[in-house]
Image (tube, rainbow, N blue to C red; front, side):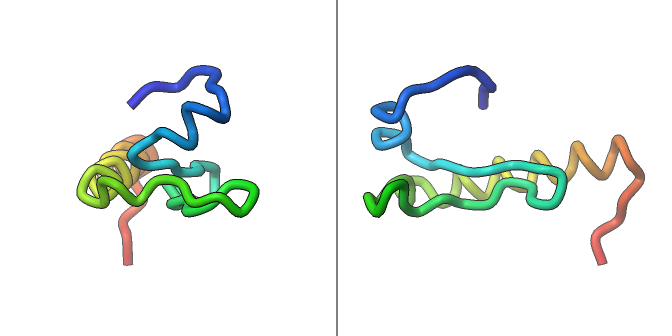
Length: 65
């Protein structure tokens, strides 16, 4: 996983696309401008989501209900 500027072409070619913010920790994106994206590696998406949530929990002490 990396954080850097990207192009629309890279988004459309990506195995998975997600949005992360203070209220969502890796929300899967399935379309951009009505065109399908991601969905090629659901196990990778789950691993990324779990890793982000684990890091957040370690830093903040938050425990999932």
